[in-house]
Image (tube, rainbow, N blue to C red; front, side, top):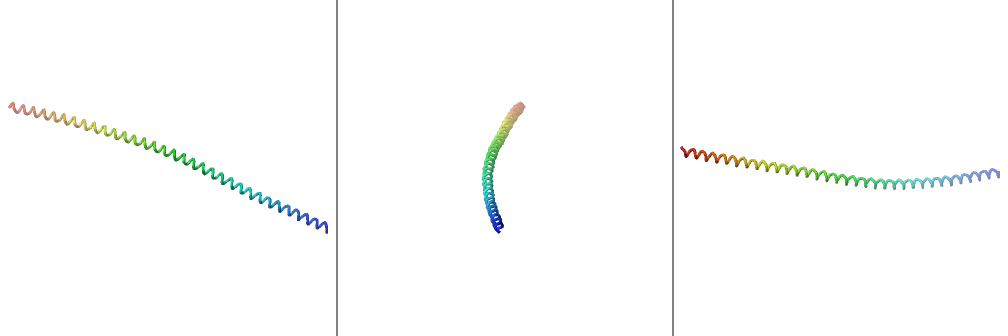
Length: 120
């Protein structure tokens, strides 16, 4: 009976030892999971900051490019308006010169006709 009691105590000791190892393993696993979650949170936060920084950089580049395109287009439009204005001025000058020439021709014809009429 003593050997059985000792065997039972030995089994109980082993069971207690294994229970303690199990509890210790569970605690270690919980700590590992918590550490992994903390690392994941940190990595997520770092990635989010990186992406926000990259997005801001892209937005700045986009705004700079947009401004450059708007300035270029405005300059092109201003140049076209200036060209049109110059062409309109040239047309108006040519028209005025033609009108003056036509008026001189009419005046000359009137003078010539008046002289011919007076001769008769």
